Amino acid sequence: MTVAGGPTTDRRSTDDGWQHLHPLSPVLRGGVAFVAVVGYTLSQQTDRIFGAQADDPTQGHRLLAVGVVLAVLLVIVAGAWVSWRFSRFRVSTAFVELRTGLLFRQHRQVPFDRIQAVDISRPVLARLTGLSEVVVQSAGGRNSHLRLAFLTDARAQEVREQLMALAGRGDDAVVVPDDAALPADAVPSDPLLRGAAVVRVPNARLVQASLYSGGAVFLAVAVPTLVVGVVTGTPQLVGWLGPMVLGVGGRHLQRLVRHANFTVHHHGDRLVIRHGLTDLRSTSVPLHRIQAAGLVQPLFWRLPGWWRLEVNVAGAGGGRDEDTETVLLPVGSMREALAVLALVRPGIPEDLSVAALAGEGEAHGFTTASSRARLLDPLSWRRKGYAVTPDSVLLRGGVLHRRAQVVPHARIQAVGVRQGPLQRWRGVASVTLASTPGPVRARVEHLAVPQAELFLREQMARSSRARGGRSPRSGPS
Image (cartoon, rainbow, N blue to C red; front, side, top):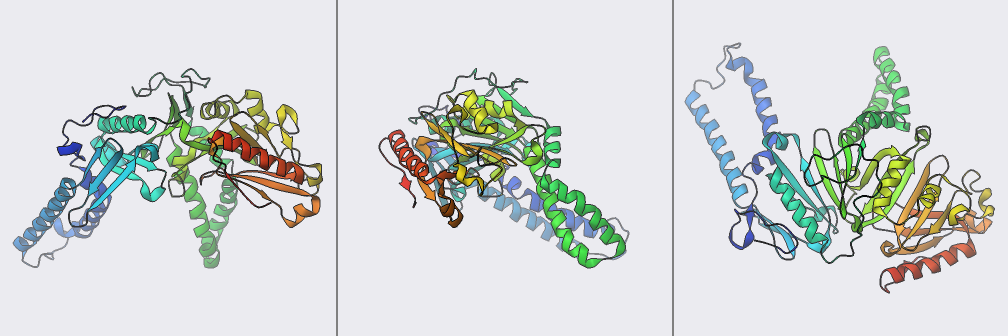
């Protein structure tokens, strides 16, 4: 079956374009549990199998035991075959669809215009067999994501390209020239990415960035204390501090494993993010589906000058894989961060972007917080502010922990003015720009009340024009 805007689907398709997943899919989906059960059984029976113990584990019923084992294996094989036989997918003219189940049937559909991103995931067992999982991220949220597990690597790439082409059909795509300035230090080996600019994050930098964090400082103090508690036999200290060390250390290790081998590829109207150590993942994010972008620089990253770039994408984030779905650059130099940001929101002058990241005061067109906020925020009141471009608004804040956000006018869902009791005392207010759920929470604090109300009215008008006359909601003032 051929769909306009995408490549031809699998030749082994069934009637009406329905196609089976790879026959090994049921084995891989339950492979970890199967290996664990087999390993536990062998570990319990090894001594008896090799004669180290004289007891007969079958109590003289060896033929019966062999028959039971064979019957269990047949049931497993039959279940895997049924699972594969009744799991099918297709790419129709308007949806990507997945049908599963024999007794309890399920039919899931994701319209092309609701596709936010398409991932290719390759867990360890899948890599050993040359298979990949395609994850279709929908604007309906995590529970509406559709997973095609598993396909061959080549077929997964074809399906990803087809869905990305169909997802962008008829949309207001942002077209970015392929020669946009990026610090390219390598050429992609993937033919789908060849010729695209690349940002690579060295694994050594990821480790160093992890050490330059509050969690690392906590571990540097807590681990020796925990060792002393174990040596001196202080169970209360071990019971209180041990779970905290495991939790913080586990999060750091998990983030390193997920972001290892991180590369950013520019591929026409999308970014392709590849990362992972044990679970290799390739995520395609259409540039026009990004709702907001945010850059942050923690205090300990000030010396090396590193930044982290995150985005809001409808339907992404909010789960255990949020880091893999919303991070475009886990740690990078200002030049790298600005280069990726230029792909996300082209047209923003570089000097304005630099002012958003590291500047303060009213230079480059920024409107800053009122001087009346000096008592409320003596360190960063001059840095807090906003600037407006024809298609986006830039917000900035923070001195010890710097942050900057870019929100397109057309992606703003609501605008609100908030004023706490201390702000009311000083005659200032904060303005929030609501985007889709995600790590980027756009706000500018401590504007003079008249300026905050003017910003509210003007931003609602700008967003209304950008959205074709549909005005965003306004919050209480």
